[in-house]
Image (tube, rainbow, N blue to C red; front, side):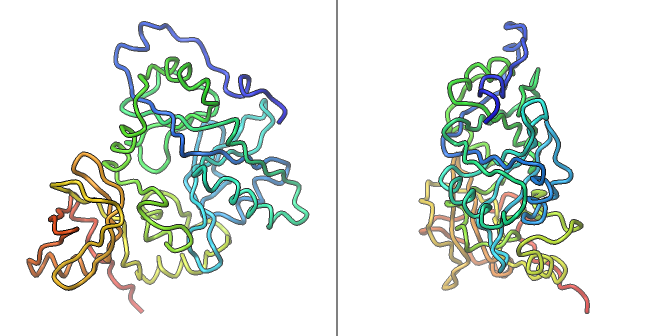
Length: 314
C-alpha cells in the first residue's frame, strides 16, 4: 500500500479541554476487518456486484451494502467508504473480520480483466465505533454510520492509533460490550449471531430499512430475487426488536403455543434482536398467545416491526 497507516489516518489537532466537555463514547471493534478495493476500475467493478450504489460513495461518506449469492442470500455485509485521492484512492470495506479474507477472495473471482487490486488490510486497520454525539473533528477515513444516525460514526484506523483518534474526536474509550448494547438498542443486526450468512436474504435482516439496498441502481448479483421480494411484498421474516425480562442465550427458539416463530439473537440490558416470522408473530399477538424464549416472555419494543407486509396488487 502506498501510504503508511499513520499518514492514511492523519488526525487534525484539537484543544484537549474542549474535547472532553461532553465526551462521546467510542470502542475499538476487534471483530471487524477491512478490505481494500483499489484501481481505476474499482468503482464500476464494485457497483456491478453489491447491493448499494457505489456511485454515491465519497471520501467522508459511507454506504451500507452486501455481496449476495446469485440466489439473493447474504455472503457478507459491510460499510464502505472511499479513500481520498491523496491517499491513493479506492474503497475500504468495513466488514466482519472473520469474513474479510473470504470476501476478498470472492471479489477476486469476479475480477477477470478489470483493473482492480483487492487486499485484506485487517492486520493493519480496524474499526473504531463512536456514538452519543457529534465528533468535534473528523479524522481521515471517518464517516457517519449510514444505517441509522443513532448508531454514530465509524473511523477506520490502526488499533494502536485508536486511543489517539478517540481523544481527537472528543470521545472516551468504552468497552466493546457497551457498543454491543448500543447496536442492539438501535436495532442493527450483527451477522453470525442475529442471522446466518449464506442463509438470510437482505429483507430478513432489514437491509432495505437500513439503507443497504438501492432499488434504483443497475444490476448486481442476486438483484432479481431481492427486487421480486420488494415489489411483491413477500418478505415475512424480519429482525425484530424485543424486550427481555431475563437473560436468554442467543440461538434460543422463540415460540407461541406449539408454533416456532424464529430464533433469538443478541441481547443486552433487557433488549434483544430476534429473527422472526412476523406473520406468525402478528397472529400470536392478535390471539393473545404469549411469545416466549425458553419460557421467558418477550415484548415488542416497536409495534411496526411485526406488521406483515401488504401483498402487492396484481
